[in-house]
Image (cartoon, rainbow, N blue to C red; front, top):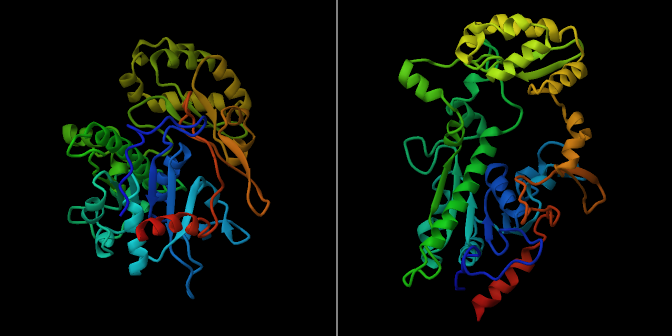
Length: 413
């Protein structure tokens, strides 16, 4: 068995120019679809070496991460795949076979981080639980993303983002009062869980660095347990304390933000805008711009709580003004008054917006079969060690031999 690598955040040599701040970090990604792979993508964008394990093709399945076949396809592969799996290596292993599991154990012994988002207990059933893997690699950090977490009475229930958003309190607030709740149109629960997972991995890497000692020369690893519903719940702001303190159950409010005024979407002559006029001085500038100096100077509207009590009156005044103006005019006039305002973008607006381009938030790649595709750029922006798209999303099993052959050779020595 190979010796676990030292933490790249402690003893590794300086990274080559442009390599990214996580250069030298080795990550084994066993997850599928969204949450686990999004975490892997984020680490890979900043220089981590991410080895993605995918199932082989069978008579009933084309093989690989199911995301390869989700939504719109080009030559049989999702264009989403080009985002979710960029900068990764693809290795095909059958985790239901002993050889596949043995290969995973060998790879995990040589990695810093393992990502999985299977149903709790699956890794243990395969003989790949953290106790087994950490026995060979005490510095291993295992990121485990699941619907309800690794413990608790719901741990064994299947959990998708749609359920997590509902249980976490978000879905109840989405939509119009009295109507069936709506969804955002993307899997927010998965993405929030992935980002919490990345935070957890970085914290665990720092803890590992601090734990280096004579007894633990590589430092000690640990499990990062992320539940989808908890990631959603963590973003619910004042929801729980308001209920605990006042018995208030927040209800859906459409496009408004209850308790903060004015902050809403407003109809214009040719579309809609969002306006955030809820700061005290911003409110005065907004009212002056729409010709309502009486409201701007009303001492009964000087503070947020006062404005909340009269929010219907304020929203009606704003709407009367916006309906008489085009979206372009509303945006131009309010921006000139330093009032936060924005048009409601479609993807067409995003793709043609100069600010997106100036911030490198839209990058163009050309796939191996010649398709030119715009993909989201890298977030966050680091001044000295930025992330980058270093390689295209791999074909199924593209790196199997490259990754496994030297590993097996070392094991045979």
